Length: 393
Image (cartoon, rainbow, N blue to C red; front, side, top):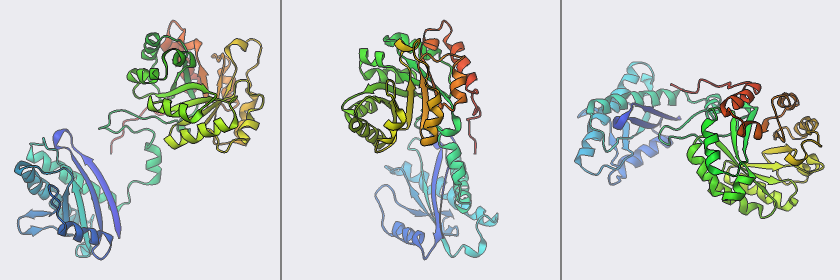
């Protein structure tokens, strides 16, 4: 047997984070246990967990400090409350039936503990490490988390220490509203962003006029006021696709747009580089006669394709909403976005055809009430469907 568990319990400097392995003495965990107790590392000395001196718990448990112990003050926190907490949690787990009594001499446990250098309160160190050890042990023996749990939380969660969210565009949250920030005035654009209500359905686009005036560095400037937002760099790349992806990526873009009028070779390199870096590759098909044929010619498909009607031809050309179903039928994994004069009366038509992303510019960015105009579209999309984002174990 070889099981893995993890748990974070507590707050402040005394917070406990435990990584745990449990398994057979004769297996991989047993080998790691023997190596750990016989190969000491300066500042990370492994020690057997004991309830009190001369009384170890069973299964035998090796406590491994994650943070370097630099002085005797650090040592006493590990060799005192942390060591005792781990041992007591293991002993109580046996008493409570979490660990089978007939296996206590067959299994061993390795418990890696985090003790902050600034932790002071021994009672809290004990309390939090006791809870984290028992929780990590339960999770290990229950094979927690399930794949369903991981898939449910991966696009909802924010890592507490990192402090910000790196958004993706999960399928379960479609459709999305993409706001095209095309006004070539960075301060005005920042003010617009500040008035946009928070929603996981909203995507921000650093528009081509804005980038042409300020360069791709404007993406990082927008990131300062939209830390958790999904930001697209609308470069409309026609040449050196790989280089332009790198430039946008360095400025924290989550996605980048190339023109479908570029050569197939440029688009292929563009898509390859975006996927290599882990950001979204988007192809804008404005003025492309046959978007489906273009997609078929590519080595690898983009993440998103835009059916785009240019501003100067909005009154002369119909939006190509009929292509939405055709593209999705041929390429079911591609998101289809629509752009070009989208308003509240035309958005439902695109959504009815299966559009995944509605791109809106002037209706929102030139509105006297940006928040109201944005909420109007969010409501058309179906509103926020995942309001309860705070997750408690």
